[in-house]
Length: 267
Image (cartoon, rainbow, N blue to C red; front, side):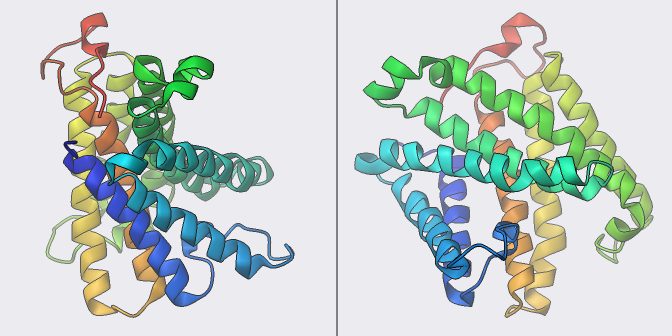
């Protein structure tokens, strides 16, 4: 079984999340909204880390890819709807709550791409809407919903985001606005099938550049800081989620638009 690069990196991200959660013995930043009053919260955090670790390994192996996807997608969707969505309603006017929701939604889009491509007989029989081309369509919609929230966060927190721009780049505020606008443009391109393959791939490349230029130096400066590892892995999750969705357009011509540009190529 050929493993496409996007799936391999997505799996590595999941393995990394699991390892970070287990090493530090507390919630990785990405699990932080598990209620502190929950009994045995530490065990729940460890269970989340083990699920991420197991799913990451599972999607790399042919005998276990289907079962790993069966576990991964519900896990990420549960995390999205139970932990992230309520915060959006409670803090509706706070862009950071939307940004946090969007980060997980982008990861869920990648997980749904894998689920749709590697569905077993049970899923194809009972969950046909979530598999194959229709499932890929849902994954694309998740990314389309996530990108405006991510892009708008660059405008809402422009001053802070500018501090993350590498010092050797001039006009840091300009880069913040540009990248935010690019995410909005990519969402529009995907939604209206205007050069969607180009839009999806350019967005994935931009998110990877942000990950490498911002978080690799942070890790190099403070390699023992859990926060840096968590932020790096979250950034990888967003970039790889976008990459997995972009990869579903690989049979579409780069400059195609309209109905023909919505064709699907599963993982």
